[in-house]
Length: 47
Image 1 (cartoon, helix red, strand yellow):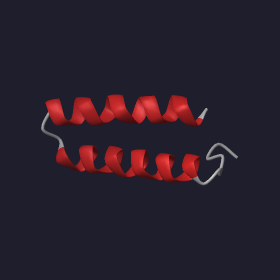
Image 2: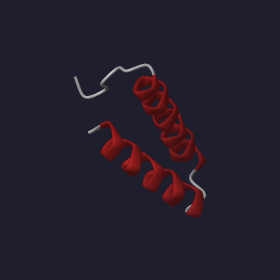
Image 3: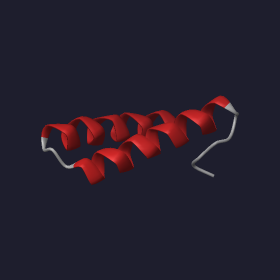
Image 4: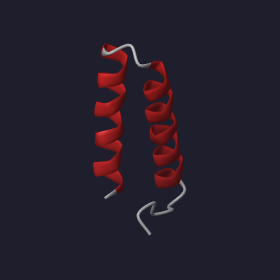
């Protein structure tokens, strides 16, 4: 489930950059960083 959220966040980031929506791009980047740090430390973000 973390991987699915990460994929959606990457898609949102790419779309935000394409649309020049920097607030959304920053939000998506923050979500990606949180997901990566959570996954690397063994924390399941879904729970």
